[in-house]
Image (cartoon, rainbow, N blue to C red; front, side, top):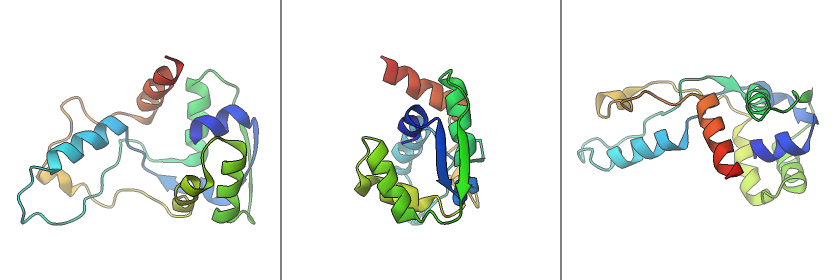
Length: 147
């Protein structure tokens, strides 16, 4: 979604909640935790927060992605009347992402999604080379798209 919006819209009229903080995590790090969580003892029956090392807004993610993709910075104009439903239809219209998939993704942006704890480290150590930064994960994803 980030890729398509960044490539198709040099000017974005966007919901004000694109300023909410989120803590993106690279897919390799998610898989790392998922694989190791399958070996946790049965008495460890709870949810864990996982997130990457960066806390960003979605607007910051767009600007960092465009820098990594060697594109001009995007102009993002926040407006207060953009509802998650309207925004998800807009994403479905201007990107190849189905509105049904865009709706929960966009809907999650109205909340700040930052880890409240890192208790998983009591059971699963962080990856040996550390968690992947947003910039490194975005560069890797972009390289895969270009291949």
